[in-house]
Image (cartoon, rainbow, N blue to C red; front, side, top):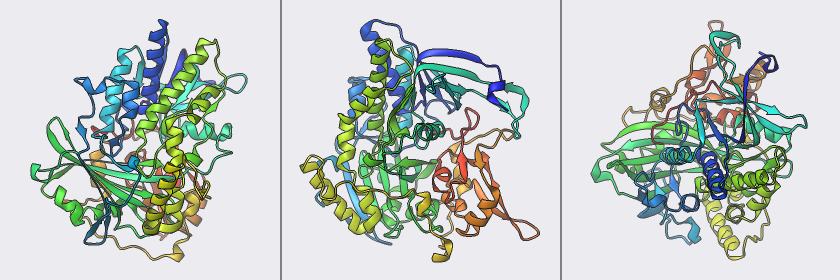
Length: 561
């Protein structure tokens, strides 16, 4: 359907925020704090595609509290505080197939330590922020997916079209069709998270990445386990690298102990950097076999998995951050990519950049401006702790990519010491990432298939069984939100050259090559399984799969991930 042929209601507010994660909600709160300080009215709307706030939020998570401390200084004294388990133990280990080496005593800069941080659920953090925002007068619309951009007469971003529902699989209106609304803002802040569908369009239209390196990504897979008390060490944090990944495949694991309503939980997670070359690598299967290592089994034995999820993580760092502001709006949080890769942390930077974007927008409104470029936000970022933090570790990811896990970790540690001591200076200057993760994949003929162990159903699980623990739902009769641009190319290249890696990189069983009765292979997209991780949009070697937002409320419904 042509969107310009549809009549829609229109609503305009002072600031429109796309995304109800830490960045978007922090921006909303900061806007209301500033308006209250001035004694002025301000209208702010937050749109969230998940069925409720927190439904699509997934992270390890160990939180550096600097973001919350800055935004809500008394959060630790609140009865509804979202983080209650402070880190009490912090280990870093290198795994072999059976044993491990504790490398925690290797010299690392102080910022790599986790004492003073908190572990728990980032979903609960966002729910806490949503309560705060709504209490201050912010309107939050969950289940309201923003699907199209709206531009003004001079090409500036004016808003979005959101809430379109009731189209059938062919894009035709059903009896319950709702055309959605045109939501406009004097400024629009985009907090869609990693690889946002509208953010991609904005970066392309305004050429925001022309002076930055290609963005890099990882896939993070996580299970939440309820464990026996005897296996539990409240506040214990463990990171590992090494087995089961080969040295030339970047990644590692996390294992975090925390209590929720008195119950002992462990967050188990595994990250694989998506610049791997071997199309037979299957991140999900690597995660499942990692759980059988003695350093993991001793904690989950006798426990039960209660939730599963996966999502892409921005890993490009300082040199991959695009231009943040454009006419009518700005990118905040993981839409721009502020994750500190060696620390495996980004939520504090999401909160801080959300606040910076909010302050720039509020001051512009105070000056009677609207729809122009928030250059003040760019300036604030370049003077901020976020900028300094990311610049200090900017070469770690490129070093790991060049030298592998073992040597790269050692060199990366030396690099971080140098940059922290010399105020960001490095003998390497700033290393580049060179190419996208999609371009990193090599033809299957250069590799041998990997024989992964079968899941035992007790500690390791098949994909579809685990997907049931994501509470994922999509209406069956709606347009497929995974757009295959050229079916012939998918068959000749993705299958013919790379031997169908989509079935392996997807952590939810969305893609499969099905053999027909005539022997032909057919590419099948099981979009109802999609947990919105965006890996396909990132890793498809031909960039032939385009992830778009489905109807609002679709996707996973994570309870406390």
